[in-house]
Length: 391
Ligand code: FDA
Image 1: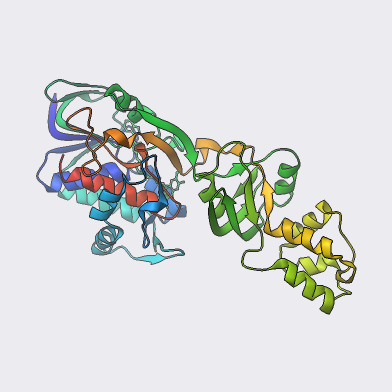
Image 2: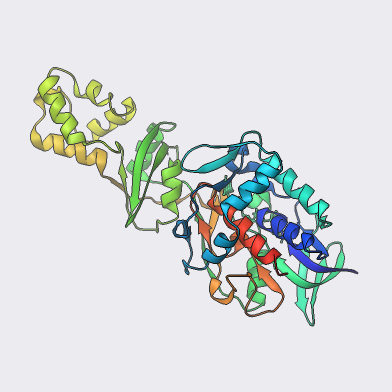
């Protein structure tokens, strides 16, 4: 039997960071992961370069049933604090777009920093170890594949459900329930949207084509790139809106963001009357998309032939393309899991359970989900740090 002050289940972003902080405070820390390798999601993140935080972290860029829950941790351990760690470790990074910070080299540099910080602080890491059961009676007892471990505090850091083949499991949700926590219904987030029927035929035909868009659902919209795929739509603006979308709701897509297409068409009609619509529209939109729009609206001929109502129909189709997604690609490709452990029974300052003293829940397992762009890792660092100060 082994004894530790703190056992952290999950050697991902949140678990490793929490372990470092607790070990630096002199706590005897063990981090357990059932995978052969730690932090697999960091490795694949950001296209292999880990978008580790964002310069513009704001609480309103996180989704949760309690939008205020994340504020405390995000304020106490900020993006600047994490950037200091990255810079201190000599990792070169750059801003790609919209405040998103990526490693110049590879995600592995972030993983190596976390592992060497954990080791230097004296924290232990057990890989390929599964936890079968946890019980509590004056401290915790964990039955693991490497024997029984006892601890004063247990931190659940098992992440969300996305990418099951990388080790995602529902273990954390089950243990949280065991100790009385409610789970806010989970859904795939930051995920491509799928279509059926005629819309699917359209997206398939344009598969691989990218456009700068503004995509909205209800009151929320995102202005970023969009990609047509053989299953539907993807790209940053679609991933972002997917977290706000619900079954049965339409999304509205502006395919020519920032322009007034009716004005442009009127100008073209007066200046380039003999230009064909097909060639003319292809000056503003990818050719295949322009052709598809004209086919759908059953329009052809030259600019000079365009009637006023036809100009409006083209402009509406381009600026307000309303589509009804059939669904999402699900956890197989989702970057995050929306929902999770209900924050009502968690202390926002420490991440400690209000049901069970000594139990802490951090990272993506909690009902806090960030936008695309480094927000989810920042939540992992901030919530891990908050628990790491007190466990
Ligand atoms: P995380 O999933 O990182 O770690 C959980 C750990 O727990 C895993 O190591 C897992 O093996 C382990 N575990 C699970 N069940 C267990 C059990 N029963 N026993 C033991 N161990 C168990 N975010 C961002 O901010 N910037 C980005 O660039 C990206 N990019 C990105 C790309 C892709 C493809 C994905 C899927 C996700 C992203 N993300 C992202 C999201 C980000 O990866 C995610 O939000 C964080 O990794 C969450 O950190 P956690 O530590 O909470 O969970």
